[in-house]
Image (cartoon, rainbow, N blue to C red; front, side):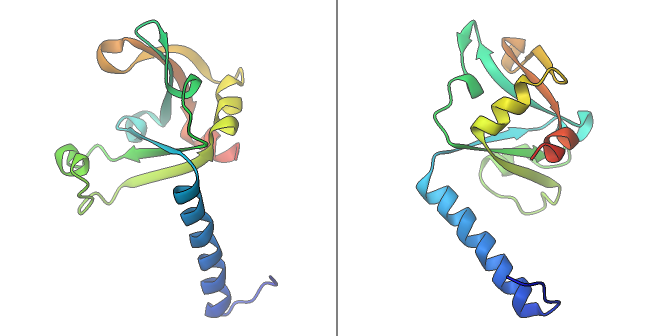
Length: 135
C-alpha cells in the first residue's frame, strides 16, 4: 500500500487493523489485565507467582495479553460491570505473550516486586513507556 493523504487510504489501513484485531480476538486466547496503578506509577505490574505457586505470565495459556491502564478516576464498579461510559482515560496495549515475557526478563526491569491481593504475589514492574518502546 502506497502512502496517500486521502481518506480512502486511511480507511483501508484502518480496516486492515480492524481485521487483524478481530482475528486476534476470535482465533487466539487473549488474557486481559486491568492495572489501576499505571496512571499513578507509570508502571504495569506483570504477575508470575501468587501464594508460592506459578501464576500470571508464567502460567498463562493465552497467545496475547491486553494490558489496560485504568484511570484512577474511573468508576471501578461501572468498569467491572462492563460500562466504560465516562471512563475516558483507558489506555491499552495488546502484545504477544512471548514478547512480553522477553521484555519482563530484561534486567532493566524490577523483578520480585510484591503485589496483588494482600501483597501475596510476585511480579515484574515494567514502565509503560519502556513497554511501548520495546514493541
